[in-house]
Structures are given as structure tokens and as C-alpha cells.
Image 1 (cartoon, rainbow, N blue to C red):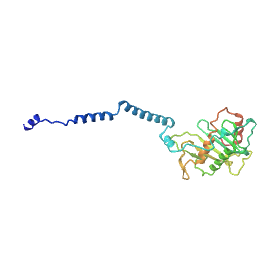
Image 2 (cartoon, helix red, strand yellow):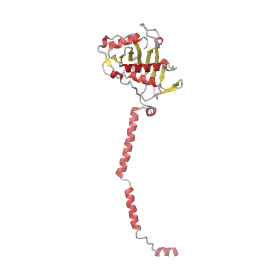
Image 3 (tube, rainbow, N blue to C red):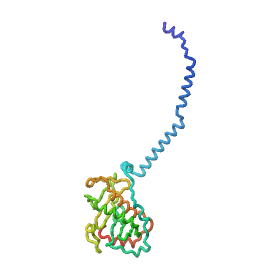
Image 4 (cartoon, rainbow, N blue to C red):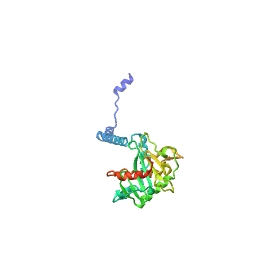
Length: 263
């Protein structure tokens, strides 16, 4: 009873400035409260940014491993890239007759579509025949640079794989094999091809060449990544495929005719 009587007659009066402080606090909170439009704009930008990068990764890479390789490996590059754009086209291609004795490098490609595709051939007079049979004369710097890479590739240790392949790791199978063949050291190809091409060429292959990936399926003599010289040289010879123009069947027939039993 005493408590009820006290509560009924008690009068608690706040200081006069309390209502001012409460109003000020309410106004401050209203100022700090995020505006709905700004809030949804930020959320929208984050969503669009995330979705864009997801689509980019999904469209360029079919597996997370490929995206990781893209992020963790440098892009392929070479000081000799674009060597065909600097080369001089042959003025009369059908007058050129290639010889085995002057052949210094040939690249072929075994792919799902064409298992015996010709990529490029280089000769000692700096002549280059590309994938479509177009003939060029390379600049001395480009020719010497490419052949230096070929010499470095020939010094690599052999692999246990078929045709001396260096196999780049991928999450799926079915990639092309790029084959690089160079006459054996200190030898000149005879006018008549030998029965076994391995008796006249040193061959090095790359399975699954990629401009963003070098990690091998299995280490080769402790080497875990595709050697730099081989990575660079393979990328260079593949530039011979991406050339405009029609195929010159006569030139291609002549060049393939001197290669020997390489197919």
C-alpha cells in the first residue's frame, strides 16, 4: 500500500534541457541513417561488379583451375613476336624451290581436327613458309633469335612421353600437340629422306600450349614448368597459323615433299 501511494503522488521532473538533447540526438541519428536510394545503389553496384567478373571468368575459362592459372602465371611474350609482319613477302612464290639441305626448322601440329597439319618451315637463307604456304624473308634479327631459341630447346632433357612431349597440365583433355623438329646437331639433311625421321631430326613436342599456363602434368627431371625457351618458341611458330590469305597449294606441296617421313 505504501508503494502504491508513493507512486500515485510522486512527481519526477526532468531537467528542462532533456527534451532539447533528445531532439538533437534524434536529428543526429536521422542524419547518420543511410538513405534508401544510396543503400540500394551501393548494393546494386557490388552485385553488377561481382556478376560481371563471374561471367568473364566463366566465358574465358571453363574450369576454376584455368582461372587460377591465368591469375598466377604471366602472359606469354617474346621480343620476336610479330616476326612475320616485319618479314618481306616473296615477290614470286612459285619460283622458290625449297631444299632439304637448307631446312633448319619445321613445326607441325597434331590436333583433333587435323592430325597432320603443317605450321611453319625455316630455311638457312632466312626464308620462312607459313601455314598457308606464303613465303617470306625474315629479318636477320628475327631469324637469329628464333634459331637461338631452337638451339636452347634442343639442349633440354628428353621426356618419357611419346615424341618427346612436354605436357602442360589442364583440367580436361583433347588439346593439340605442337611438334618442333630441327635437324640433328652438326648434320645436314640428305637429299633423300631417311626411313626413320628420328635419324635426321631432333623432335620436341608441347601438348596443350597455353599463353597463361606452364605447369606440367608431371615434372621432367625435376622441371615442373614448361621451359621458357620452349614456351616462347612454340608461341612464335603458332603465329604462322594466324595469317590472312588463301592457301597456296603448290608451295605447300613442295615444302611437305622435302620434310621426309615426319607425318
